[in-house]
Image (cartoon, rainbow, N blue to C red; front, side, top):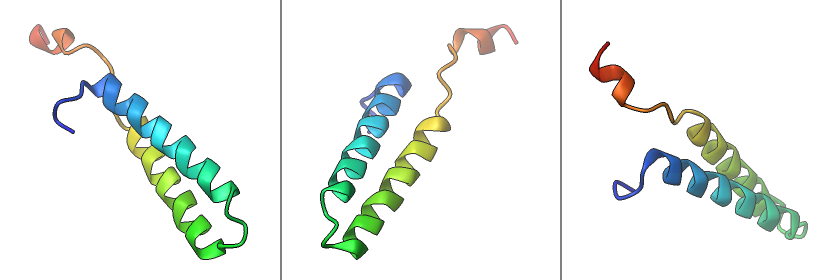
Length: 62
């Protein structure tokens, strides 16, 4: 996803996490798949939290 800004990538990951959580909740009859969806959501949220959204300009004069 190199074509996305860090903010866009973070927004996408949070959307993806929410989507997986909704899908997991909608699949009580598929517990293994629902568990995988929840793990995917957790991974996406962790990746989103790790994205640095601070402006790069501060590093130029560091």
